[in-house]
Length: 411
Image (tube, rainbow, N blue to C red; front, top):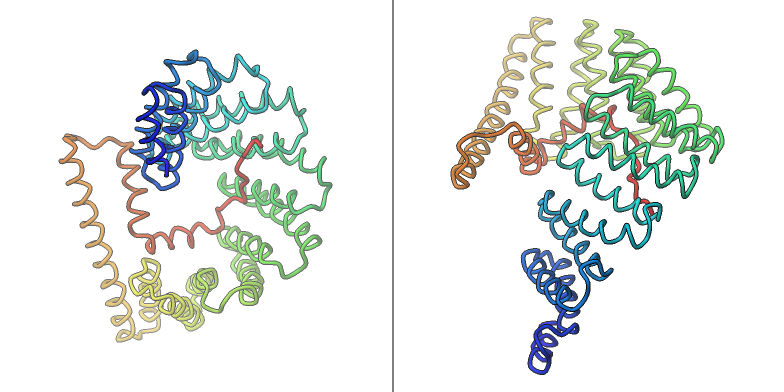
């Protein structure tokens, strides 16, 4: 319909008529929704050209076009172009609305999110802090939106490995959550949970357990003894005990986590396989090889049930089972398990080789003589998408490391 409208308008109106610009803008929005991003950019550029011939370059409608183009560039992963559009839009908005207008804070927030995608940490932090300054002056120091921005700053600091700075932001966010919700709200439990994770990453294991227990206590009071959130916290505490070689305590926590997961999820959920695997590892370390094999088999059965015959975690489980059989002088069983593990490993190596070859081909077609570190990082992300089933091990092994995060909308 937009195409027909544009055709009619062009037959009766001058090519620089404002109505033509509006139709081009509408077509750009339609193309954006359809995922036809190149066509969308083309329409927005035509719209912009006409608008600039009829209104001042600081007119609000120009800022809207820049903002729409930013959305398209963001979808195309053209982050430098997206930032450029944000900055142009911002320069128009800021004088008209004032630096302290809440919408300007959202612009800083959006620019920061793009910067974070590019791992431009220092610039992202600057945008976060500018957003915070505006919120302080418009919303006050203890508004929930301020807490959310603190949480988002944590993400950047964690990416940089600045755990002390991350803890500082979480503690500021915690004070706001306590003032808004009181001592026993799930949001407060989330903050303790996340602080526990950072302590865990720092190797402050006793502190991590203490903080996790605060989160656990609040969740039990607010949500009951069998809520799935409790399973994650029990699991995390089990992992910390595992790291401290307090194996009996770790098994106790894993069993509590398992009891909840078995009620909350299907018997073949990957969470449950992960817990079985960890319990098997502990029994393996303790020399309880029969018990270890029993739990390894349960974990392997879940992965097989999920139709993941070449799951990397499954290769490791088979290898661990082979070690247990070796210790029990069950050499035949050990050989069978080791063959299964090696077969999966070979398949994974072949897949890695295929994907590496594909990337090398892409580089050659683009005339890239050398691969930069940043490109290698992007390639790792690409492989994660291509081998989506392969990523499950990342989730399983890092399940205890996932923050309960809130994305700042600055609404």
